[in-house]
Amino acid sequence: MVQGIVVVVERAGRYLVVRRSEHVVAPGAWCFVGGAIEPGETQEQAVVREFREEVGGRVRPLRRVWEYVRNDPGAPSLRLFWWLVELLDDDLHANPAEVAELRWCTPGEMLALPNLLESNRQFVSVTVGASGLADGFPRGLPQ
Image 1 (spheres, one colour):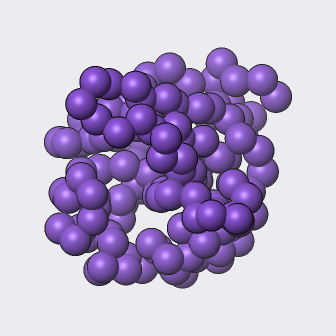
Image 2 (cartoon, helix red, strand yellow):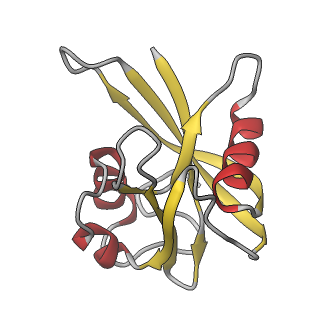
């Protein structure tokens, strides 16, 4: 089973999302920053590394907020751990090897993006909802 992390950054009711480059899995898809957990790496280390690699910024992991598991026949099994983070450095820029574009979107704008990854659509629909974060935490999640 492939295991990965997803980085959830919120600022003023908007979430950071990226459009994946043509050089990675799911080219052109919109999603949160994220990627595979490397052997020997903790989830928190993967969060920091993936964010730095994809958009050049620094974050501090706060807590794991959601988990997504895919067990579709004919596709590799996948488990994603979703992490709420604090943005420490907002001098962000897309790494063209991994990211074609980055954008700050409201939950509604995210759901309207073409080719939004299904796991991201579920996260927004189930945990964030139309109104976004409440008191810094996604709705419906333990605080």
